[in-house]
Length: 157
Image (cartoon, rainbow, N blue to C red; front, top):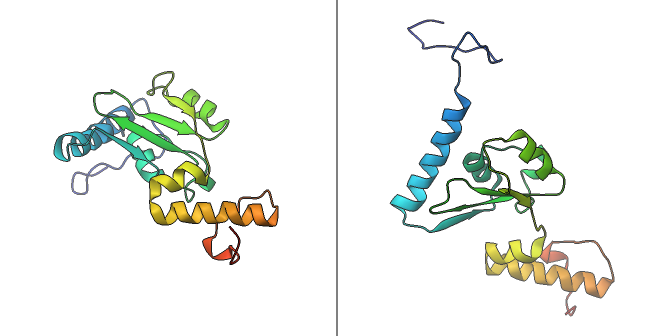
């Protein structure tokens, strides 16, 4: 550790070195998010479908396969609430609650996943895409959720 370049902390936390204060980091992120959303922008709440925004405001992390898929996990931050509510897919919620003691009991809930409501939140284009995919599956008799608008055959409705 040198004064010229600042402190360089070890990778593992040590009881004899201050290192990174994770509680302060989590509290600071949530405080900055609340200031930006509620004081600067005058919003009443934020429903975050974006993995990285959810990670920022909840200080939680799940398996990497959930990150590119908006809607597998999401969070809700409401003005006046001390802590965000996080919605996790399946048993991931159990592990999130167990490993995130800074979130109150009851603030980790089961997510309702799928293109239905997520597409509505994302706008008309994606809602139309989801409806088209549902029609495509109905016409084909398939049970999978093929969510590509372009794959819907013409006349299928």
